[in-house]
Structures are given as C-alpha cells and as structure tokens.
Length: 206
Image 1 (cartoon, rainbow, N blue to C red):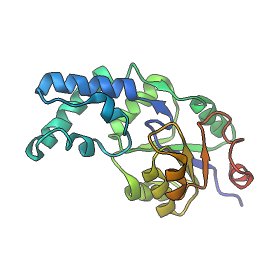
Image 2 (image 1 turned 30 degrees about the vertical axis):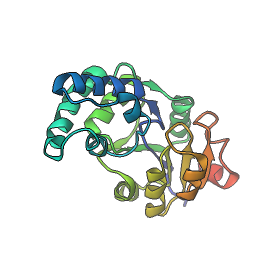
Image 3 (image 1 turned 135 degrees about the horizontal axis):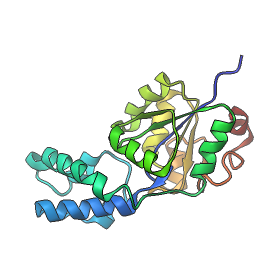
Image 4 (image 1 turned 60 degrees about the vertical axis):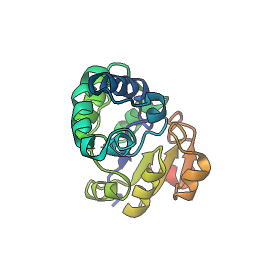
C-alpha cells in the first residue's frame, strides 16, 4: 500500500515573502528599544531563529527581552505586508487535490506562523514552529513527511537528518550551489510549476 502523501514546507521565503513585514517589525523594535537593527541586512539572511539575529545587535543580557519585544510587535507590523511567493498557493492546492497533507515546519514561533497562514488563507494541516536545522527532523518524522521543501541550507540539513528528500527553492538567501552542497535532491527557482519542475523520481513521489 502506498504511503499517504505528506509534504512539508518551510515558511519564510519558501511559501511566503515576509521580508517587508519583518523589516517593519525590526524598525519598530529599534524605535521602542533605542537599539539600532539594520532591518535590510536582517531580512537578507532570513532562516535562522530570531535569537541568532538579535544577538548581532543586543548585548547578551538583553537578547531575551528583545525577543519578547519583537514577538509582541510582530502581529501589528508583519502580517499585513506579507504575500505568498510565486506558485505557493497552487502547490498547496495541488497537494490537497491529490489527497495529501501539508505540514509547515519553521523556525518561526508557531502561533506567529499561523497568523500568516490564516491571513493569507493558506490551508495546512499542521504547523510546528521554533525549530531549526536538525531540530526540524523530529517534527518531519513524527508527522510522516515524505518530502520537505525549503529555501535555506538548514532546511536541506533537516531533510537529510530525517532521511527524506529535500527540495530547495531559490527564493531565499542561499545559492543553488550551497543548497546542493547541503544535500538538496532538487533545486528549483520557485514553486511555480511544482511538481513538474522536479526530477521524475520526485514527481512520482507526489
């Protein structure tokens, strides 16, 4: 019997372009705390957990307070400017039409990820947040994910750790060479044409 189709996705710069909203949140954080955060630089390296970025700007003893402040500001500044990336809506609809399940595994806090998905009407079956790189593997395995799609080398590490194919999209900060080096089974420009742009063996999995 064929296993049920379960496809996992990263969120930021895989399904959604959250850069404008995240930049706005960083600017609001600067205004609130008086600590300068270069919003353009920060959104150019989206992928790692929030704390990783805030450690660049805040003293160690202020990072946790900055995380809390950022997350409190996030719903007001980050949700409305965010848009789906090309092909994202169609990819989710195709999986759903084939009777599949969709699981979002992201480094973003789960409740904030849900705000984006609900605002954009992107229906998914499960959201698991606050995980990065190898940490994502447990969520991928426990949810029966058969294929994981992401934009960051850490997403390919997650897929490899979970023992499943990783499909990389070039909509994030990482190059095709970096993504292949991290173990991507396929690299595509974006989700447009998914899964037709994938190699035949991965198409068959879908």
